[in-house]
Every structure is written in C-alpha cells, then in structure tokens.
Length: 357
Image (cartoon, rainbow, N blue to C red; front, top):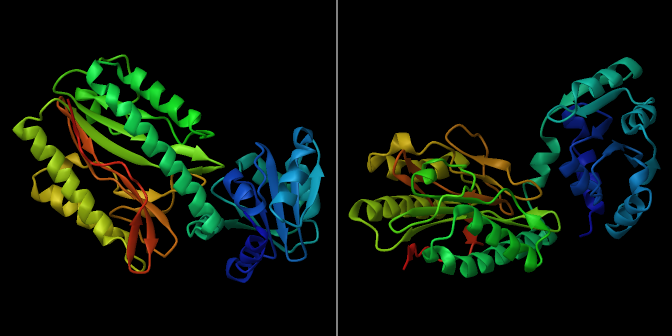
C-alpha cells in the first residue's frame, strides 16, 4: 500500500484539534500511518516533518518498511523511545497526545519535560482509519476468503463428535495453512449451553447430537482482519431451535439491509433489535449489533443503540445480532459488509445453512 497521503490527512486535522504537532503511540495507528509493524514505537507528526522512534531491534526493519510504503520520514533508533519523542517536540507550542493509549507515566514525562501545552487527542486517527482504501479492502477481502474456505472444510467434521477445542484448532490451522498470518482474534467454538456465552472460549466439551454450535472465526492477512459468525445445529433442529435460528437470521438480514452511506449506525442496531424484541427475546440480545473492522478487530464505527456514528462509503462493518438462552444455547449470525453509497457489499461468503447431518 502507498501510505504517503495519510500524513497530510493527519496534518489537516491540526487546526481542528488545536495542535501544531501530534505524538502517535497507538501501534495500530503507527502502522496505518507509516507501515511499521514493530512492537515499540512512537511517531511525531509535525508541520515540517515526520519522525518514527523505535528501538534497536528494528534498526533495519523500520527504514525498510517505511521505504516500501513510500513514507518520507526520519527514523531514530534508541533505547528510550518516549525520550526521543520528547526531544523532538521541544519547539512546538501545542502538542497533541493520544489520550486513549498513552500511559500515565509517558504523559507525565511529556508534561515535565515539555514547555508545549499538552492537548488530549481522542480517536482522531481512528476516525480517519474508519474509511478504507483499495489496498485495505483487498487485504480484508483476502482474510474473508481464507476464513470462508476454512469454515467450509471444518464444518464437515462437526457431526463426528469433536470437541470444541478440536474444532477451534482445526480452524486456526486451516487459516494459517491458507496463508493467514494468524487468527484475527481468539476463535470461538461454543456448543450446547456454552453457546449462551457470547464470547465463550473453546473447551473439551464434545459436540453432540442436537447441539447448537456457534462458530466465530476470522483471519489476519498483512495486518487486516475478517470477522464472521455462523451457527450450526447437529441433526434436525427442534421446533424451538428452528425458531431461534430463524429469528436471529431475520434480524441479521434486516440489519444488513439497513447498511448504507449516510445512515446512522444506531438505526442498523434498531433494525436488528426490533425483530428480536418482537420475538420476545429483547433481554437475550446482550451486546451491540456490530463494529468496524480493519487493523483492529473493533474499530469505528460502533453499531449499537448508543452510538452517534454515521456510516460512510468505504467503511467495513459487522452486523452480528445474537440471542443467548441460558442452559439452552446461543444463535448468532454475522457478516462483514463494505458500506457503499447505495447499500453494502456483503464480503462474507459462507452460506447460512445451519443443519449438519
């Protein structure tokens, strides 16, 4: 990806933020801005220049990655990354710090050493990152394809009484063998009553006949993530299971249909929530409807009942309503969608056919 224009977009926020420089310490923001993937870094964005500070482990990697990304920046190697950044901002009068990620200790060091007035900057780069460019969309699409292909393969073993943990390991191995860097997040496989926990971790519970099985799986490709959930039933569903599956699937379809540029993300949440409430399960839909996905698995926009975010073309969001019945199990359907001016492209390709025989 060519990242050179991103620095100018950040500088374009300076007047709005009331700063003449910004220290970027969130590592996802560092990567988005410069292409650097190391685990220790700070970037100083000033009107007249861009400087990346990192430690000796990355003395070769950092210049190489910035060059490949076509980012014109100085790279400073040193043991004290924050100290280097402090020295670089001595001439600034109003300095922005990323309030959501910088540690209290680091903030105190800036306050003690700098004459500049410090400004707490919250989510400025996260908001810029919310709209994806072509290179980002291509990487997300690759991650989606890997997860889709892996789930298609692994669902074939669900009827053979594996454990939740065995299914999760098969999914993780399958994604890596298809070229994923790693899993996008900890893979969820939750069968029977365990499925009533929205973020259940895989256990040694054997998946048996009659179980609802929630599988939430995503791949990581060159820093970018996918996110998808499918629910299966082992054998023919009971009448109540079929209603459970149908209501949540109808809810998810309504939410996906509401996604388009210019729509309040709150209305997408409402489209899902209204259907579940009508079915009598309002109190069993216990989380937001979705979120943005990119370098992080949870990004802007937020899709819930409290959000003020508005969808824009180029955003990538999940729509993932669920109903969780304690002692019975859970059902969640989740697709990843690319927001367009007149609707959305559904990126997730796995079918919503739940029955495993």
